[in-house]
Image (cartoon, rainbow, N blue to C red):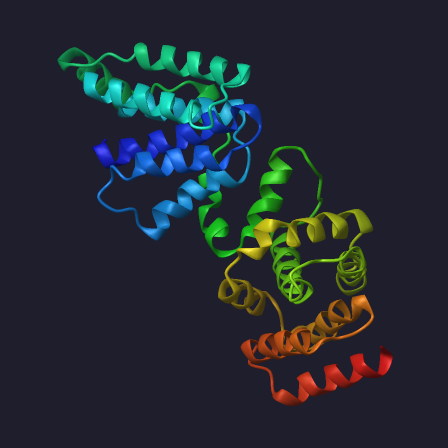
Length: 304
């Protein structure tokens, strides 16, 4: 493995250490970025892979998988020293070293110290790789990177899947329906967030619309809405949300969805100019004739 790949893997392990106490501070994120400045240049795709680990907690099983990948990437004593220094810098980045961080650091240090370097160590690693001798626990450990494309294109869908894996919710939906609901929730959140906040009334409106339009139980609608209006939703790429939604909806469904968007806009008792323009922008992106936007606007105005 190249030094660049080793540093990328190290970056993931460092984030895993930062999550040991249940949170990632700004200081820890800055420390990670300082380490990654060692790389010639990180592409947007490489940064996105690291963001996947920053945005949601890394549990013990996933951390162990990352540490094993790091162990396999170490090929010299200098690599070991680089890893130790980087991990120490991260742990002390916010000037507070928790008991959880100390324990995780001790475990990782022991794993790093057990790596054999030099000719024999390299031979051992080569044979190990050839026969595929990797522990079943590591092989079965969570790997969020299998959802990388979804993370880049639609963070709402990614967040729903991650919550399911972490047993924070139970949605009995097919992947196709889950994707469609997530995309819809993300687009609805764009309208609700026009005034930079989502009120309790607007949130409830999103839940009710999801129930009415997609015929799903309230707990499922609430779950998707919670993800859609999270901070993650605010950073989602508008193009991918709309493009993804268009691919899973018929023209009739897109036209009906304009009523949904206006219902969200009207949730706080009035439809503002900015909310109207956001719906207009979405309708245009859907490639719908302007008359459908006008019809939905008049309907919302008359009923409000």
